[in-house]
Length: 435
Image (cartoon, rainbow, N blue to C red; front, side):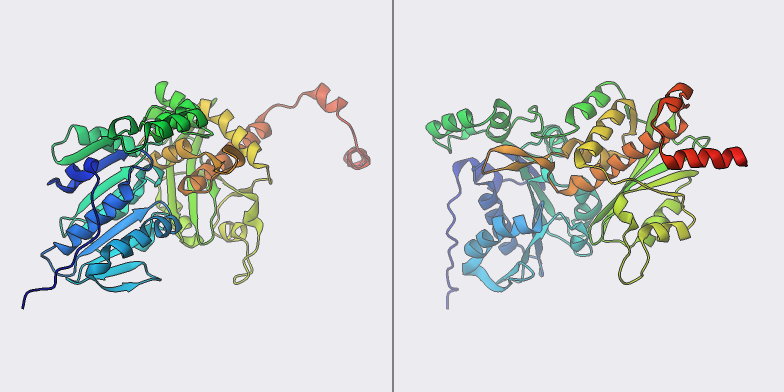
């Protein structure tokens, strides 16, 4: 008896036909908003999963956040794969096809959840919003033993790693690459594009609809400062100087990422020689990381909430670090804007090691204000995403540097004499005189 014919209700848009017909292992597509890239890529995964001749195929769709991936792609995956679905799991967000291949939805906000498995193929959607290490440290090794394929898709967010991939793909025949601009695809009505152009800033329109990598990252706090550091050659090889102590600036997470910057103060310069970030690790993990490096340490600058005591241990993270003989200084609580301003003042004095601080530098480029879709304006608070932790850790270094330089600055005797005096100050003076 002939096998039952099953039809997937997907009619590819003309601009995606070359992508579906590609033979290259690697692919990158830069696509304007509302082009239909997620639908195209979900169906491409389904097609390649159901046609896989190997048993137990494993495929993944990854978005910057798990909640975003579930909202954007999960319903598409279930709907289009329904005719060939053998099983599915709503809580784990995977479907299994009739041939045994499994497709799973993931978020890059918890990359450790991806580790340990193999992959025959993966789509990285809105890759410009992901931390750079997700590809090199997590996903690329998962493709090795099955020689799996990967597709990077998204809209530009400045000259970040997504831009680097796009640039590389154009010069490498092993890559499929496509740039889908709204003015060229004709997928959106011209009248609608004109309305959008009137409602958006020129930079917004160029980025979102014309796929411009040149447009500034909208709402970025440190974009201009980091670009200037790069132009001035302050991002390059910054070696460790054994004669100068290495201080660290932290952002401490519980069930979240913890980021650490390593810096040295050399004259009027601040040398950022190293950077480390991990997710969902205990404090002892970071203590071991610091101990494994060949640095002579100065201060560990921790955010003010490090003094909070954990219910299970009854100890604060400051006490935990202090018991490990770490020279801890807890920073005073500051307003968000004060931390941002402190960082802006430090960056013009900063030198960054391009390789060891790569993820941290990219986080500073990407750290931006949250955008309110209702009011069409930026809020007065940062967007919380993968870049937040390293940016907050950098702010700790900036505030720590300000405290150190204030401590070392010579006192002006006349200013000290004219300073308002309290009764306690005068009593302290009398005690010193009596002594």
